[in-house]
Length: 400
Image (cartoon, rainbow, N blue to C red; front, side):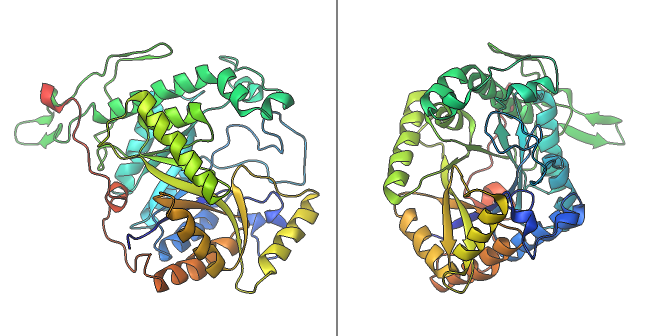
């Protein structure tokens, strides 16, 4: 049986808003490098494919579209790219995939940041572009406005997609620009020949001359081509418009099904998006399902722990992803059943950290190994290689 791909999404004290109040949480260390280093090295001990880092543009809120003044939940975060770069030299194999905002960040800076991370990690970098639809986030920068989303809009996925379509179109351009900039310096552009005094070959550096509806970027990049050529690009998508964003420019799409039938349905929507944007048939787009998990060896304990956190937070946990409470064996059953629908892997969101991360690495992973569906050692050193994705040739190399 083909080995299962497994990733974890790291976010603060965990994906439950009250996770910072759990008995084994480390709230005093949330903004320290040591805390994040411990989480990522634990994920690597479990031989996971990669970790993702969330990166809210403004302060987190309990609402999708509006800021709040709550003081009983964690607010604030460290920069995801800098965080990934900090833990890169402390790890050797695991992929590092930070989230960055593409609505209020210049694509040139995004390209150099992720390329630098790929160099620092020796080919283990990825990137999750994320747009920002909140008007309050735009006010942090003051250079543009974004359409305000109402409480009624939040209930209508199709309406949100229509209203935010220009932001998705712009995000598509950003991803294309970043990918072109990664290719704008050929693999052998840096000569560094002391004897002849040549540091760089002129023929190996190319302007990208991108002209789009929203952005215009000449290039080239100032950072040498990444070790992977193209670091992994991953997009979280819930509806047709973001599916098309993923189909146009991503290597991995994260989907959020709530059943096996829903998994089949959403994979069908991804396939339709691929067809709509005319993505080449031989160009892989891996599909990972997101799942928010609470894990304990004792039956019923995970559900009780989540209930306790719900009581501390004053509300039942709500999520775009399905919420699982149970034992590692029960989760293994679910993952293997869902994989038969056509998934390539899963991105698990630990409900509370570090408890549910170790539940994954020390409970779920051994269980999957016993079933012969998870690796016993790392193979390829690059993230693309581990996911079975080829290292692409530079698109401008033939023009030199």
